[in-house]
Image (cartoon, rainbow, N blue to C red; front, side, top):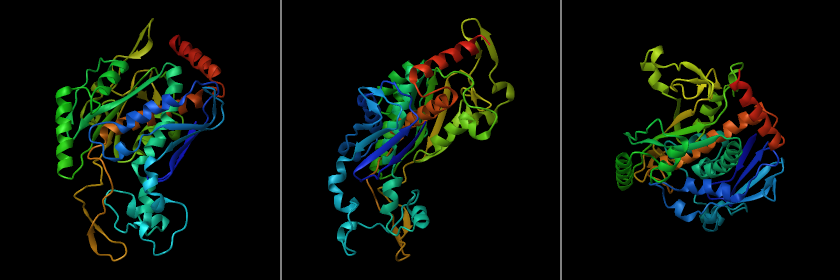
Length: 388
């Protein structure tokens, strides 16, 4: 499985093309819309989420509620494009057209200047429109399809918030995935501890009041993934490495860890590694899950636990200093619409990014042209490793 996305933040639409989805997988637009709506929520979101009502149109690859095995294309129309038609339209404009709204002052922390240098754009809008986190709506669409495939195979994925602005929300590690998902979805900041949630919202509101932004930590929890997915043989087939790279590709994410992650650097080996146990009912399992469901680049069959660190959004209403690329004079960076905190929404994005990597690993490991055949193969593999 693989996917490509296209579209600009204020362009006509976002497009996702997914290749490699097995045929005969049940799929309807409402299942994808559920994920897109979740991405738009969360305390701290800006005015853009009030303008756009993300709903997907499936334009190929699905017939009568089932996938065909051919590429699936998803379209999310940008309702706000009607206000940006002259600025973002594809028709040529006169050189002196005032509607260009040219941006020559790159914003610190964004792709603006680096993208301009790379592609020769003296109008930074040509960079920021594509580098915008708006593109994650298209990626969530791909992940939503992946989550449907995983669910049909008995694999569930949930994302939630563990920390915002240094405020940590504790979670009972004995909670199942369904319990974690239910509790976090009921919270405006998608977390567990009500007291911590209230403090997080206060911090978000204060940052907004001050024209600032704050970041945090999102976590994704996966149950049902069979052991042995990924590989120790080649570096580029290590599944935790693939997931880490994919999470790092999300806008504003600057760090990834599995299980206890960086905490392992401060512990002895006996406090880090998970002892191997066996029972008739469970087969092989680990007594603990400090390594987050991975050993040697492969799944262990234990729940996958991965965290992602999101920096504060760099678009600030009290802008940092920048340099005008035309005059080389210092100026305050330009301001685009922004959120004061997008960690709750980012947890949804991360959930779907991880789901796609897991679905990709499944379809690489087993015959995947025809979904019933894929399901039989996964079921047979589970029986095989259970009795190994």
